[in-house]
Length: 239
Image (cartoon, rainbow, N blue to C red; front, side):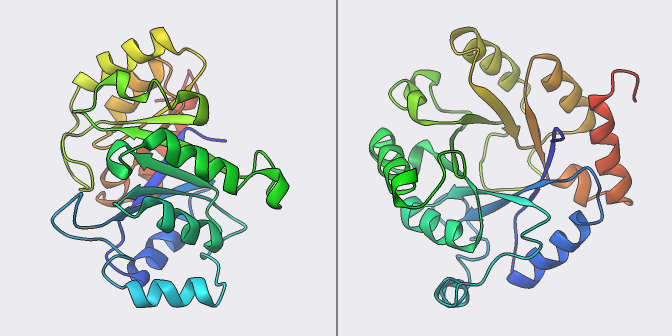
């Protein structure tokens, strides 16, 4: 699996499908992150929070996300109804859910419930669904201490305001990641927010597993070539 995970902050279902069709043309892309933002995390809600009835209909009719055999879907749940929303996204075919520390007053309990609900004894294979937690720039690293035994990965936010694409990368995240890895070297780390090609190089050098990239691909003249440039970072003799 490649290091690049394209992110989409959809304004509508049509917008989501258009961007997924673009990602489908990128050979290196096997996983896509969908940012689901309600208006508690950002002033403007993304899809499906701006079209709840449409989303509920998809869930009710057991519809799957497009290109379900092509992509592994990860959903960044930026909303106060994270558990209920997570159930819905899993029914559409998502296999990775990222919760934020503000997703619940008791994050450890939320993760325990989700792991119990989707364990092998209720029809899910143990490794079929992965759960992660996102650390916003303002979050104390110690806030995850009681939850780390329940997560498969930690996502560090590289921007100051979660839920918005195009925000500038804050290099302070590099020191935060180093400090975390010193204490928890075996936990997979990914970074989301403001990641450029230069930032991606720095992040990979300190052991980050995946970079979540939106604007640095989508807002370029040639998104397919931009995605290939990120993929080439895996090659020590690449650009």
